[in-house]
Image 1 (cartoon, rainbow, N blue to C red):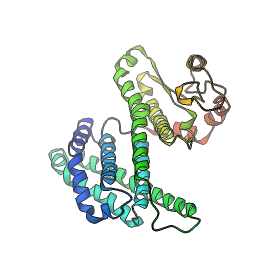
Image 2: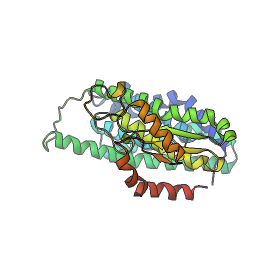
Image 3: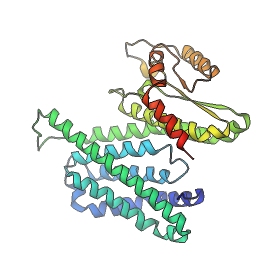
Image 4: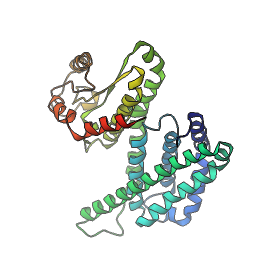
Length: 317
């Protein structure tokens, strides 16, 4: 059962339009629970809600394949923050279950106006999205508790203070990096798609080795590049039948402002550009254009992640 594109767009628009209203309803339902932990202010919890609803509005729209990874990462972060708020695991599940109820209640008028099959397809999609989000949020919650235990030598401190400013900085960084590295690239590809189809052109998304394994000192950057990799793979699958090739470029450190101050081997931007063009000429799906990334190439191209990408792509309708 599959919803039509107009039906999905209609549902996505309603979620986007009612986002702030649903955030207020969610916060009111939480009551005292939202302010129980003085370390995490109400405004920060509401911001988490807004991020989740923003992503859900895209998950029922034309970008749904590309933002699936972002949804899972956002839910994992939600679970981590829930641990800091002092919630039990069951309360994390309960809060996301209420999100399901909010969506059903607010989407009901729109879904009722659709053909029954279309409305049912959208509800099934949203149920799958929420179910996956709950599972990942609980994992994030558990990981955060374990990290706290290790940080306190096995004895969690009830009065431990959390830097809320630091949490807000993390959210700012993740949102900014996703906007540039994932959504920006995706929107550019969508805008140029008609021209690329006519010319049988190609898209080369410049990623990073951080897309394959996170750099601990750059968490927002690493999250955005991992999301951009998933987006690139989804684009590759969806555009394969439309004559547009999609390439992923896995760069190592490049001598730019971003890496200034790091005493590590770097390649010049000009040399990186030459390596990317060489990979495009060879028709490589995944391009490893510099000395730092080349040793990874063979293992990635023959590894389980690449095998799964091919299998999932072949199974796509």
